[in-house]
Amino acid sequence: MQTTIPSMLITGVSSGVGLAAAQAFLRRGYRVFGSVRREADAARLRAELGEAFVPLLFDVTDAAAIGRAAAEVERILNGEPLRGLINNAGIAFGGPLLYQPVEVIRQHFEVNVLGVVQVTQAFLPMLGARVGFQGQPGRVLVIGSVSGQVAAPFMGAYVGAKHALEGLTASWRRELQLFGVPMVLIGLGVTQTPIWDKGIDLEPYHDTPYYAPAQRFVKFINRTRKTGLTPEYVAAKLVHIMETPRPKVRYTIAAEVFRAWIVPRLLPARVLDRLLGRSLGLAPARP
Image (cartoon, rainbow, N blue to C red; front, side, top):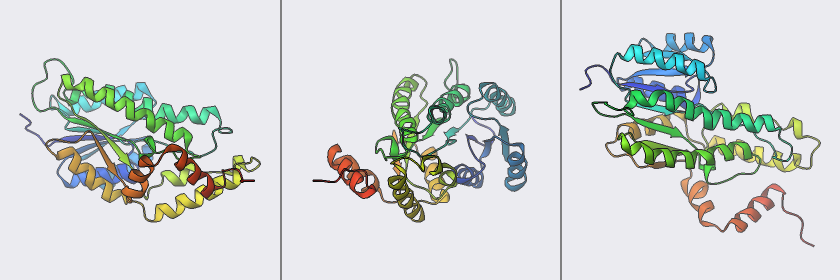
């Protein structure tokens, strides 16, 4: 039986959805372990969020730092289980795949896929995935994207990584039945977060034939962001998903679910190709 306050671990809490989720779970009475990459962010959040927030300093690509953080969390828990893990940390850098540096593409998979694997492997035993565990297992939430199944041009590296998470999470979820630990994929739509501020720099592609179509895509993204979900809205949904007795295996959280999720998946692929091609100036002119 759990005798202390429930504990959550959330990666990437310095801003955006991660920060809003940390605040939401703190308001619900949780102790929140949150990962950041910079000591300055750790100090800022420690002061802003109070004693129930415990910053963890690690990059999701740094296995040694993750190991140290896991040991620290285990020490603080002192035998109590983790209630949940939210894999939120991620990156998104746009660009045409023909010209995008392979190093940038590789970074998407290192952070958005292998980072999830490393963090989840490190903390699953504390969630109940171990022989001899007694008590109520925790659960794992993986922040994916509608882009994992609906592929936008000029976001290929991000789309590929999120698509990989779809398959990875499905396989892992089935394996975790052995321990009774649910794993849930969150298909997130466009949100009003800083991830897009950091990720769409078209200047390296100025002299390529993709520059004008990519500019149109950026304008579309900027318009969409204005009506995107707020981090606070997403955080409230994450609290519900973490606390509901029988979570679904996948949730789509998007501002315009019909347009952004249902319609693209119902349309034939070639039709969607043509629609996107014409709107962005990618389709060749008809004779």
